[in-house]
Image (cartoon, rainbow, N blue to C red; front, side, top):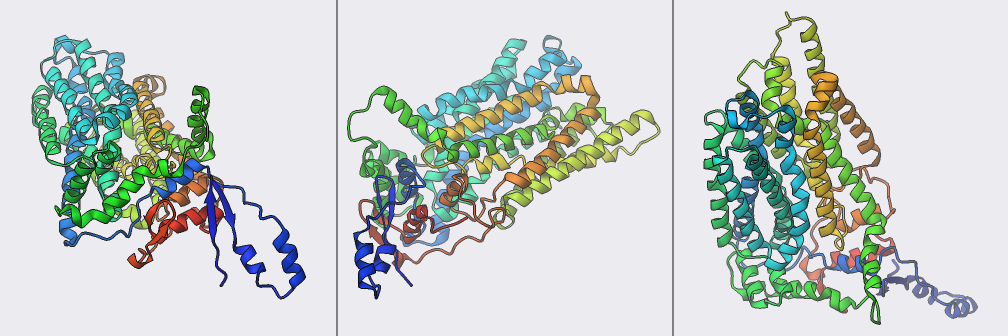
Length: 579
């Protein structure tokens, strides 16, 4: 088997295997002729910035501290749970409008009686404020650190609950929910980066997937409390959540990666030792050395320019990654997933569930039906977390969109039949199928964009791209809730549900044609796919590659200890690795 050696110089990949092979030819004349030919570098498939981001990926086979797997996992789980308490508190703010709308709609509080137009703002104003907070999230997180930023976010949530408990004015009601939405934007950057930076590769996927579950659990708690308590009392009890989250976050360490970027190496080393099983810094010395080299990688790779750059050149250079297919295609995919997730019906069903169940004549109390809705959402999310690793994302997504279309189609047909024939009393039909739609959508399309958002973007644009894509998602959520009453007024509830059917079926077709399967593939392989290097089987899940033996650790010039896996990733730029 021939050996292949490649050099990466200023973003160019040179394959020397051909010259090595020709050197052994039996034809001296041919050997001389070939030797005199200039070796032309292959056209680089990735820029220097992208190559730099590829080598920054943490290898999976660094030596582990001498402790049990349980002890090594425990601190990572505890730190993630502390972060999840913040998301639980935020999830409560998302579920709160659902339980308040019936009271405001029925005029039970004279000072806060809202018209349908005002209710549409009340139900969606928090979503439109999320992108505003998102604009500040990255800068705040980089300045304060992941831990302190998450601790700070609890303060506006606490203030919002106090205002909601005592408010007697509609503007203050709006402002309180707008504040919770702004807070949701602020927490995006710290919660998205914290888990990725504190966990080991084998724990990262499972722990990262608990974020959506925490938000949905917070929503479910609101639905449960609404069956036994008035909404003002619920607002008072909700104050407990951010207080507990603040205290728990105080007890866990900050991201060692962020600490290292700020030159606080001793604190970073201590934090890493805590996160790897409460061991001594000496036990994690090799991983800490790699972390430091990762932080210094941009300096090792060198500047993109040998001379001074003007402000305009710096701007153009920073803009380049956002003009490539590796950003544009994933951004369109994630934005489409957000659009179909919100306009397939589940967003408005969750927000206006009490009134929808009342309108369809559900056989049980509407608040109890709403609680069941939250329960099946949580169950569907749990199934997605468990199943996605062996089934892949495409099957779950396609099943959920087809299932949602069937459920909303049956419910719409039942509503039409019931209106034309009042003797029809099969009230279990809308309840069953709407609950089924909640289960199916949370098993796939509702969670899909949040799973993809951390996988499909290259590392050099991942932070900004994730923030921009999630902002687009919240805008779609705002539009879905804001237009619900207008849509129902124009085409009736049944007509609105049929629109959801059309959206879901359209999503099924488009995702079947264009959506790649990212499960079981490395981040580099996903980036190669969006760069245009599709290979057979890109719609199928592939099993995860076995972990490389620690003896395969090799030294690579300029980058310190990097695993064979990551050397292969660099080589794949030359076409050796396929999707």
